[in-house]
Every structure is written in C-alpha cells, then in structure tokens.
Image 1 (cartoon, protein in one colour):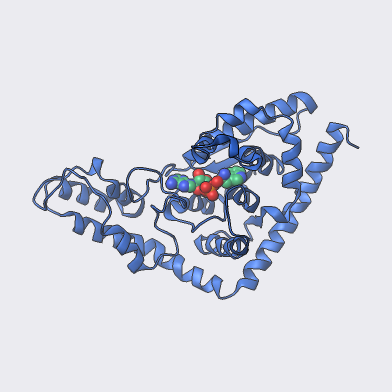
Image 2 (image 1 turned 135 degrees about the horizontal axis):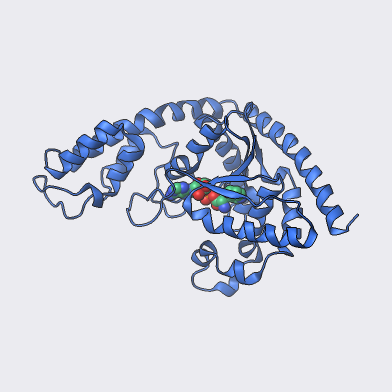
Amino acid sequence: MQRLFSGIQPTGEPHIGNYLGAIRNWVALQDQYECLFCIVDYHAITIDYDPKEIGPRTLDLAATLLACGLDPKKCLLFVQSEVPEHTELAWILSTCTVVGDLARMHQFKEKTEGDRHLATLGLFAYPTLQTADIVLYKAEVVPVGEDQKQHLELARETVRRFNQRFGPIFPEPIELLSPAARVMGLDGEQKMSKSRGNHVALADSTDAVWAKLRPAKTDEARKRRADPGNPDRCNLFSYHGFFSPPEEVATINAGCRSAAIGCVDCKKALHANMERLLGPIRERLADYRARPDDVRAALRDGAARASTIARHTMEEVRQALGLR
Ligand code: TYM
C-alpha cells in the first residue's frame, strides 16, 4: 500500500469546504492507502491566535474528524506538535529551500498584503514545515484542495534539491486533487474559508444553516420570482452538485431555467439535502464531544505510532547529513 499524508489547521471552525474538499475524501481513502492525518497546530501559530483557544480547538477538530468517519483503526490521526521531529526536519529542509520560491507563494502574498516586511519568518517558511510534514513519513500521495497545489509543487522542488545533495531519501510527493477542489463561499466571490466568514460550519445547527442559506446570493439577473434563472451563474446551484442526488440536480436546473421553481424553493431543497448529510455528522460530533478522553486517547495512540516512523526517518536524515 502506498503511504498518504494530509493535514488540516485547527484555526476557526471546520466547514463544508474542508469537508467536501478534504475530509470526505480522506474517509474514502482510508481503505486504499496507509493513511496519516495530522492536525497541524504548529502551522496554526503562524498567524495571530489565542493560546487559550488552540488546545480546545485542536481537540474539537479531532472530534469532528472522527465524527466525519476517520477511523483510528484504519488510519493514524495525531497532532503535529506531539511529534517534534516535524520542526527538526523543517529546519533541515529550510537549507534546501530557496527564498525566491517561498516569496512566490500565493498564500503568503495574500496573507501579507499591505506590509510584507512585517511578516514573520514562521509565516514565510510555512511551506517548508508543510514539506517536512509529508516527507517525515516518506508519504507519496497528498490529498488536498486546489489552494494547496502550489505548496505541493514547492515540496517536490525541495525534495529534489535535498535528494540531489544528500542521496535519494525522500519520494517526490504527488497531490491527489479532491473532486471538490475549490468550494466557493456563501458570498459566491471567494473560496470558502474559516478566516473570511463566508462558510457553513460542520457544527452549525440546522437552523443556523438555513439562516446562512436564506439570504445567500443566487443568479443576480433573476430579480423576480417569475424571471427565468441561469444555474450556471448561481453559486448555490453548485452546492446542489455536492449535496443533492443527480436526478434532483437535473430537476432543479430545469426548474430554475423555466422559472417553475423560485430561489427559495431551490434553497429549501438544498437545505434538506445538506441536513441529510450533515445531521448525522452533527450527532456523532455531540457524542464525541461528550467523551473527550476517548478522543485524547485516539490522538495519543496516533502520535505514538507516528513518532516511531518519524524517529526512524530522522536517524536516516542525520546520517545522510553527516551529523552522526
Ligand atoms: P487548511 O486547514 O486550510 O485546509 C484543510 C484542507 O481543506 C482544503 N480546503 C478546501 N477545499 C476545497 N474548497 C475549499 N473552499 C477549501 N478550503 C480548504 C484544503 O485544500 C486542505 O486540503 N497548509 C494546509 C495544511 C497542511 C497540509 C500539510 C496539507 C499542513 N501540512 C501537509 C497537506 C499536507 C492548510 O492550511 O489546510
């Protein structure tokens, strides 16, 4: 079995973009690969954060991942800071990463619009830590959404430089793009993200989901109920593609074009279909939240198993660097 690694940050609330773009895919991949899934708290501290919140958020994200269907019997689920070799390897890889490449990263540019000189070294070097996450386990496959493609290209470049200098130790990781690689936010303008507040959280109650869908933008050319709409210009119609059965997607498509259904009808149908998928996740999440010790135990076990692999890789790396 090939080895697979992916990560998610414990910042903000996990949302349906994370679920459709990553987590749902991870659940399916557990049976096909030897999987490691990591809650990357060392990445989360590269932006402003509250030290009192990151611990509870990390635990709650683990509960969410379990509620979505990650199974610790099939995969390794752990927290990055519990395996300190991630940061040791990141330092070593930083000697094989070129500053000009890091400066081209879209995410770095987006996050530092304004005054780039005040950006921290940690935020700048973020992709090097991401590379270390992957290669510490010699993972070959990395499932991600589209926003991580550029980081993966850089990871391959760093691996090539490292291998050229020190010998063929790491495989070049390839990305496995999710079938929903870029889920748009409720604003229809930017990708769904925790920081932009344009998201539906996985933990949102059914009423909270409806309160977000009801005012959400649809085809702006459709001013009145009687106007025919164009689903291709409607952000919410794209959500039907993720949550609704294909026959219903086809009926809604035709109904919108002929004005047989209005935007509220379309949103109600979407809400019902989202509830069918998200309702059971919410219930399982409530169950895991009620037994945090079980979640902690799963994470502890995951970290112990990950550490064994990590220590082994670091021995090999230190040898290759001449540090032993
Ligand atoms: P993060 O925490 O921002 O997101 C976790 C995963 O969710 C995907 N994603 C989306 N997919 C589709 N549409 C969206 N709107 C959307 N928003 C988020 C992301 O692509 C990602 O797969 N740097 C990474 C975490 C990381 C990592 C790694 C990933 C650290 N080390 C090693 C892979 C391998 C991040 O910030 O993900």
